[in-house]
Image (cartoon, rainbow, N blue to C red; front, side, top):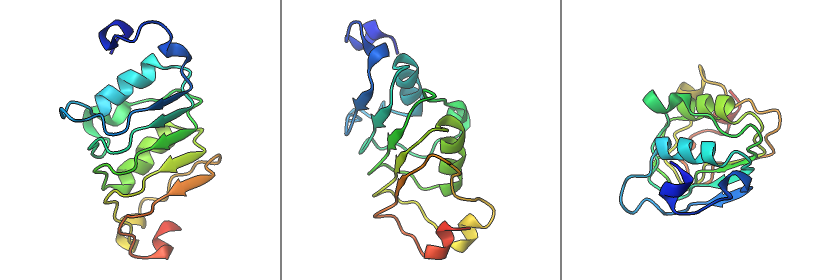
Length: 143
């Protein structure tokens, strides 16, 4: 995605906060678009991508990287289901997260899901929102 293509002019490289909630009306907003936006907005600290129909990152999207200083990643109300894929993505692409919002998705956390995949290890993580997901056991969050 280029600044000209977005029709937004100069200044995207200085943005600190970007809110793109519910912008996937035409079904073309996916992880590749997210990667392009993150590259374009190199100074971004916070990105809010709620209600965009995003599914789990993976495949060609597995190599996505975020600005190194990204502190807030909000993915509320998407179509996320895989705890292992989210762990892998967030720990590698967003090493400095303070807040990870995963509320109102369909992420299944149970002992069989988490025995081989630990929760995301973010030494800087202060807020993890999993409200509205089918968590079957509190212990599953600790494995």
